[in-house]
Amino acid sequence: MAQNQDSSRENVLRSARLYVLLTQAHCRIRILDAVHQVIRGGADVVQLRETEAGDREILRHARELRRITANAGVGFIVNDRPDIARLARADGVHLGQKDLPPAAARKLLAESQILGISTHSVEQVRRASEEGAEYISVGPIFPTPTKGYEQGVGVEYIRAASEATDAPLVAIGGITVDRIQQVLSAAPGRQVIIAVCSAILGAEDIEAATASFKDAIQRHLFLLGA
Ligand code: 3NM
Image (tube, rainbow, N blue to C red):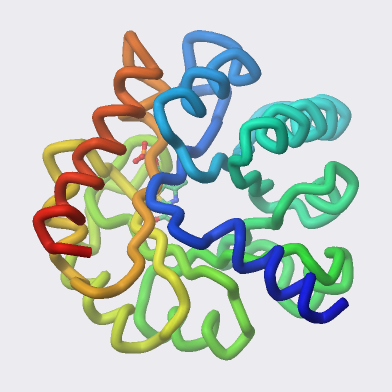
């Protein structure tokens, strides 16, 4: 049993490189349609990040995304809501600094579900690591209107975070294809997953935009010999 739990936690993140946030407010088409393009483009993990919908709609979307991602072998995380993550059998939940404390969220999650935590300082990285986060998100690396951040913390924060925890890192905030090299060079040898919302969901061709991120990531890793 314990072995299965470990392997299912590990599987969601193992070799994950591209993590796409699905927020309806940033997408011209229905996110339930966009997800197919995101998957075809090569996303490894998708997150349901609803900012405006009611609970019933969020649960309905979460269940549908679970079905689609399970068929495609893609990871599925629910933002903010461990209750919805549990009901929809997502792979896990993503918590911000003002969401439920990780220990409380764990009580709602199944044993096999993972917990990711957003951080904005090295102190928060250390705490998230102590709290047993399966991945730690670091951002906003660059300014981003998606969450109203006028300033980014810079790629230096990725390096500092990599020294403060052994957990996989998810770099987020204003990341574009042109910035991939800069982001991934900040912590060579570490698993840094690239998280993107607007540069993919706001693109005319969502599948092509996703694929261009994945290509840029793979090119960088190939050049590093990783
Ligand atoms: N969280 P985009 S930055 C949802 O720093 C979110 O924790 C952030 O969207 C953090 O790729 C961010 O459009 C927005 O910038 C990510």
